[in-house]
Amino acid sequence: MPTGTVKWFNTTKGYGFIAPDDGGKDVFVHISAVERAGMTGLADNEKISYELREGRDGRASAVELVKL
Image (cartoon, rainbow, N blue to C red):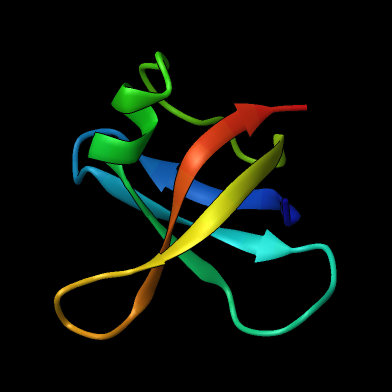
């Protein structure tokens, strides 16, 4: 599972971004993935592991989130 650090997450807007530990583009994370993981939100600079899943728009987003 890839790991990364939460760059920022806005619960009001319902999304945020994770900076992958291995570099590359930031990964989008939606509130629905956070809630499915049993969390109410993500804190800035929090370490997290995730799976990448391609969305309907063709862009990858983080799912199966686990706090490290």
